[in-house]
Length: 178
Image (cartoon, rainbow, N blue to C red; front, side, top):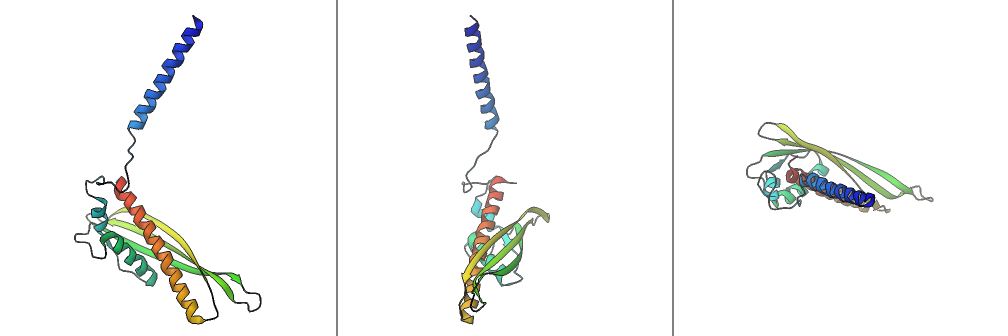
């Protein structure tokens, strides 16, 4: 009889555990990022197209801005902006390897950090903020124009990746509503 009581207690505890887990997980909301509606009832494309991006202060910010505008609106301007996105970028370049005979750099790394702030225009409150970081490398040559062009290309690659990251973060913000 003692074995039967322990077996029943184990069954009851197991059942209680599963019921408790079921109730606990029922409060969780798992939603696809690109679902048909966000928490406000609008589509993600509608939410993103309502983001006005502040004018750029430099070439790199302009690259990020252009990529974001194309991602958000397909290249147009927002019809009725509800948010304003403000960007602040910093870029550095470091020589990674030095050629032993000439002392010239063989590889250079461009590091870029963009800090963004999303402001709700209705009450000028902070909706969300964050930062994104990316690096791109390029091989140097003995030709000055080739080095300048390679650096621009590396900056453009980094700017595109940062824009993709910001778009993903803002999409997650609109989908979750927080």
